[in-house]
Amino acid sequence: MSIIIDNLNEESDVIEAQNAALKNKNGIRSLRLQFRGEVRMDVMEALQPPPNLLGLVFEGYIGIEFPRWITMSFNKLKVFKVSHCSSLPPLGNLQSLEELYIWSIENMKYLGREFLGITGDGRAIAFPKLKSLKFYSCEEWTEWEDIRVEEEEDVVSIMPCLQDLVVSECPNLKALPHRLPQDAIG
Image (cartoon, rainbow, N blue to C red; front, side):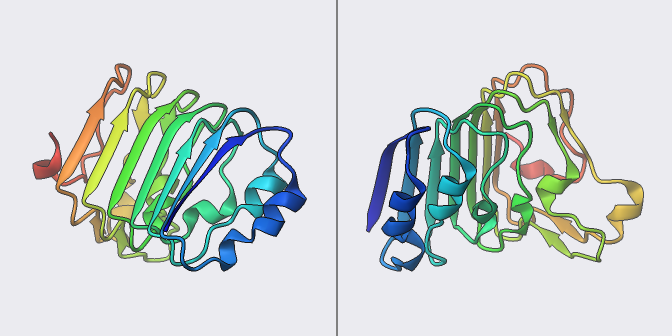
């Protein structure tokens, strides 16, 4: 079952979001959240989807940070037209993520190592199942931080299953990290 929640805005009510009890609706496989204005973080947290969700779409989100549950396990994550967020959460920790699409994150200038989920605790694989990674129209994005030499020993593999990497309409991005699978770069 797919669910679309449209017209989320500053008037969205936390009680209404809690009553929706999305996290208890295990029949939901795909969720699309469409924003039409700023939404309070308590409302965002109350919209937590069920743990077995396969696909999530975030569209038009206006917020400084993403809700904590965005790092749950999904197979597919699409993020469209995000305002005010300057970074992405540690999505490299998503063990089941196979497809990640990022379109127009207006304030993202820098993508740090935290995106990979590197914690310095000997983590072996970042984005272990990711097959497709696409960035479109992130016009302010200038730097994608590579891992440091001392981290190379801890991080055995980055995106080992990656088959398709697209970076398009990101005119200010200076370089890609050297540890990305070179045969995936299109």
